[in-house]
Length: 142
Image (cartoon, rainbow, N blue to C red):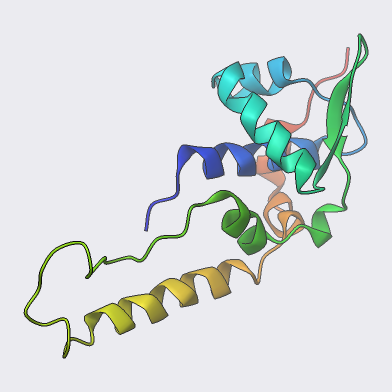
């Protein structure tokens, strides 16, 4: 299974904010830090705000920051909210003589569910426990 860039960027934003908890951050800051498009981030930040993960502030001293403690941000739930869910195999898109007797679709469906169930056992705080990850992401305040 491959996650979309949208989901990737959503996780990166949350990781950055979690490592810099309690500090307002801008899209420009995150875009520069990760070397990714400011425009892609705009959509991600909007959705993360709508989902209640981040608090956004307008104006000259605007920006955004985590609204929820990293320990309460479930990685599996973030991925489910940002990733369009489609079957691993789409047996209905092309004719197949096995459709009435094939167990493959069911097996792959259970494997996909196991993937999400595993992700749901981790929080943002679990990922941020890695000291090296935090060192890379923590802003240096001048």
